[in-house]
Image (cartoon, rainbow, N blue to C red):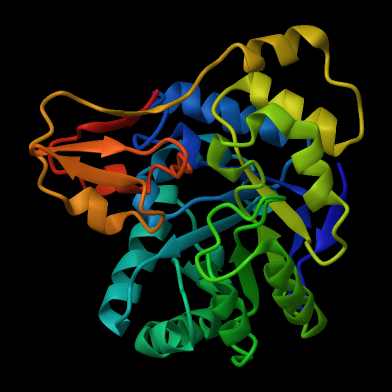
Length: 315
């Protein structure tokens, strides 16, 4: 496994980052034991970088998998907090539920522009103080927007950027992939740590896995790539690819045979909270029930967090 220093931070991370949303209650909903086993396999294969978020509801999985090897693992989490009080609450929750004294990277979740960052700056001010106390090692943002990256470059205190990157530009909300890559290059040149998300477009590009991974791996401005993994087979497959090794046929077959889709259960009452939360416009209401446009859906799972009746699943 290849390792790189994350921008101007003192954090060394594996080229492959374990994206943990997929094991969480929002997606595969694995048991704590099974989810931790998948993470442990990733660690055994050399992956030292784990991406999570408060939204994902999976800190307990990470605690179980990393409790005996915490100092060898880099943990990045994210929060929607915009105030000092909210940021403190989110950080303390992460520390407690993961069972750790510090978080390596603490980011503001889904920042879209300079306006968004300024609106959350009170939270950043708290994070700066938390960093001075040793509670976090670096401050970052995640974004689906080119403007979000451009805005992060204006702030020295934002050290890490977590943008969406895939060969088709799926999920970019304000431009195309060429524009996104130019913004990433600029951020890289300014010393920002860059770790990409959704190289497979939330599952929509699964038929071209090798091509998709090659697209991000050949980009020298990306330090690491977060890939959602929910099984030991997926961990092994992705590790083989990132190490430029041939994937065993039996592993590839198990993964290729699995079909995934967004499911909205029959008891949906069409409240529309998920529609408002979907930045892709993939959900719509018809006769008091929500339906998904599979051409637009990234299978990110975020919408399910806004369903009070737990109608939305990825299966």
